[in-house]
Amino acid sequence: MCVLAFAWNVHPRWRLLLIGNRDELHARPSAPLARWPDESRLLAGRDLEAGGTWMGVREPARAAVVTNVRDPGNPHDGVSRGLLVTDFLRAEDGAAGHAGRVAAEANRYRPFNLLLFDTVGAHFVSNTPTVRQYTIEVGVHGLSNGDLDAPWPKVGRAVAALRAWLSAGTEDLATLFGAFADDEVAPDDALPDTGVGLDLERQLSPVFVRGARYGTRATTAIALDKDGGGCIIERRFGPGGAPQGETSLRFGVG
Image 1 (spheres, rainbow, N blue to C red):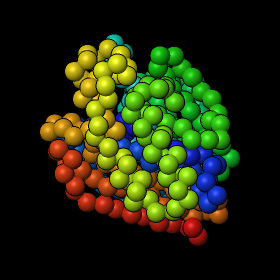
Image 2: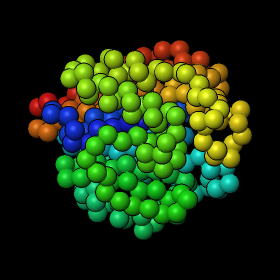
Image 3: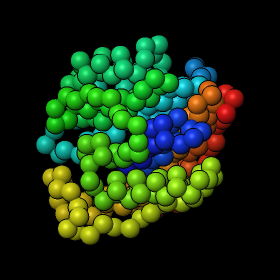
């Protein structure tokens, strides 16, 4: 997952409304969004290489998302960060307590940013460049492969798209999915310097990355309402951004 925006306790219906693009090598094996056969309340895609997931829900009121941190100087030989999401979705402790436990052992994992949501709160944990953990304030936020709300061009565009959708007063997610197909390359003077070189910074700067080997594999939206219902919707893409199907799962009373 390389860029996302979310509204926490902003919408009159949705306690959490989150949408994001997962960017990954197209050759990395993944299973599409589904109810996991071994845990029917867990709704997520599945990384078939490491066994975890990048984004998911445990109905009716728990969600988590992880991104990597773009830092080529940081070793990527720890525990798979996708397990952070599945561990929380399977856990019985609250988001606040779980965030504290993750922070205590954060250096075991590959560089990560983790978002945890339950009925009580929203929490952010990261282990790069240092271990950080805090409660997320009510509002609209964005995240990519840097810090929460970092002023990267793709984060700004994602947050602006979500704010525009919220201002329109609609509950139709189609226009929001359309905004996350934005493949405009950011100008050089707006790019972050994350140590990967200017050419790669340009390639990774759009909200939606179209590449033959690496690019946006899925756009996923999570909506959790205030009455115990919700949905998770995933649109999948192949090399060059070619559509590869959509899955929509709804649950609870929403």
